[in-house]
Length: 513
Image 1 (tube, rainbow, N blue to C red):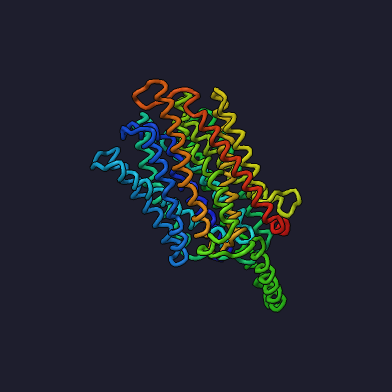
Image 2 (cartoon, one colour):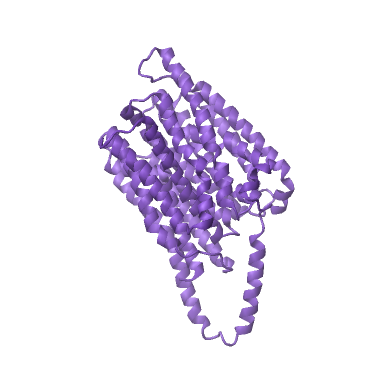
């Protein structure tokens, strides 16, 4: 298999992995049932939600491991950690095979959350190494598929486990344990050979990405449509599987084209031997020159703390994307408190729109790269954060429509922020130590998840006490009103930090454009 075909196969493989790696995105769909299973308070439920995010604190270990271990081993480590974390919870909570304390279940949730980092690290490194010149496009497209995870798991549960809410909750735990591990076992052989970047023709790359964009957009439209419109769950699941298989047409097409071209060129190779060698050398020089474009400096992870840009960026991620994730973690309780029973539909909706959000930066970068009107990564993040502020204010309106619109908008821009952050880490701190550096930035998630989630749980508990309820449940707009204002304020701070980051590096971003 040629290196060019191999890197496209690798891209499809990590696309599949990302589509099943967002196991934490399904948490809101079964959090209320988990609360009943364990007979715990909203505070303890928040601690479990935090545990999954806390696993990212040790995410940098996966980055270090990727430096010394083959990527397939990093991948399998991630699948195994998730299998242990969710699998033992399933056997304890659902099958009652043994008893675990709350703190032991918290530790398993921590382990499951950490597993996502290992798979993400392997996927990001493969995408960046395979397409260094188009790394934002490659990373953005594959990362966008992680936004589909909530939708995919919801469709599987509705097909096979939806006889009751209790069975659905057990289905999510079982799928979260098995599906990523199986996915890692299937795709690991495809990453055995390192798919290094080659100086292939720009025409092949352009056609490949355009086809992938078309397939990806069609997948997103299908996901959104089936989230909003009623359809048989089995047919919806079959459709999403067919859309996931469709990108295989790209490496197959590239392989066929290379085979035909090689046969045609065999007859002329002797006459053109010297010019071909000269052209190849020229292409390699141009290619190496392109790879270095778009990186401000290479920073080792041990020196990150000495960079002011790192702390500004860390704060931006803490007060911005992390707040969106905390909102998603509390979506089940938010819907319940407002009297909206369609939690599953909201999770599928946020997942589907998050898919488009993750894709959007790549789409704009690919078609508008070099355009003077194309905003830089910090400016795009600032605009996304302003939209999230507006969404939190919209949630102050007592309406199911406001809840649906806000969930969709937050899903879109949270997805965009997630994709942009991967690009900005590489732009500011380089690609050589990306695996460790980005996991350190993502380490802000558990800090925000704990602090901001704890604030939400306190407001919720006070609301339940105001109602005089003894079951710990709160019903009414006041259950999260103060929380929405607080979250919106944090996003405003993040937008200001994004603006500061741009002003500090405007020469770099102007030169890059």
